[in-house]
Image 1 (spheres, one colour):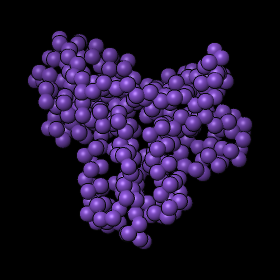
Image 2 (cartoon, helix red, strand yellow):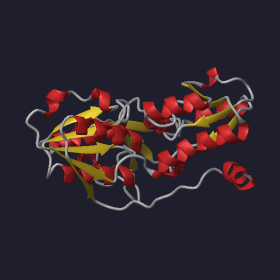
Image 3 (spheres, helix red, strand yellow):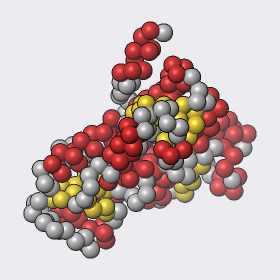
Length: 312
């Protein structure tokens, strides 16, 4: 059995930055450091940071007054910032810069009195944070069917943005539906789907040409990992989302000659290594990496942490 490794895979620049922010905060300020929501959607990462002294909470009422709190890579609503400032919490913002870009677009269009539409999945932390940028005139659509039943006040003054971790193909269908129904709708200057999401999806498409089965490493609550699994299935390959090698069922591999491994943007490389090692125990004897594109994107750390790093 041959293993094909998708490249790029795993951590994107936004995830790398968010994890480094928590690590540096713990080194600079000491434990405990509070983190609102999982810093990224990876059980492995969250458990590792928890062991170092990070305390993960869902809401700010779980954070003591005056404490340090980190906002996750997914971004938060304006009301969360307001509450944190009111309670004199020291805020360190780990929001992905690409999510901040979407927030800026939303605030600009709202100021210009556009009625707003967000393409995204209800309940996802990034969607909650983006919807929370403005108080009203914001519609969430998750499918072409949602677009067809959408009721707006002014169809001649509409704009849309997208959740960054959506499927490229899924987003394209919804955008086309919006343009059909509202021909004058204003979209973002550049597609909001992040480079890492698109690159990892392209890598899965390439994998599907060579393999019988695709394993996507990522936590169940990771949006971009779920989209990779769905994409593998649409490419006609049996695809499974796994949190670690322990989730692999040997029957998935019966009669399989080639297996592909991809990893969502929150999945650390150590999990990939463990999966490869486990597959070797099941008879895999050949390994090849399929590179679609080289990634060299880096995002700067917050100023206060850059300063502490320079002093060190």
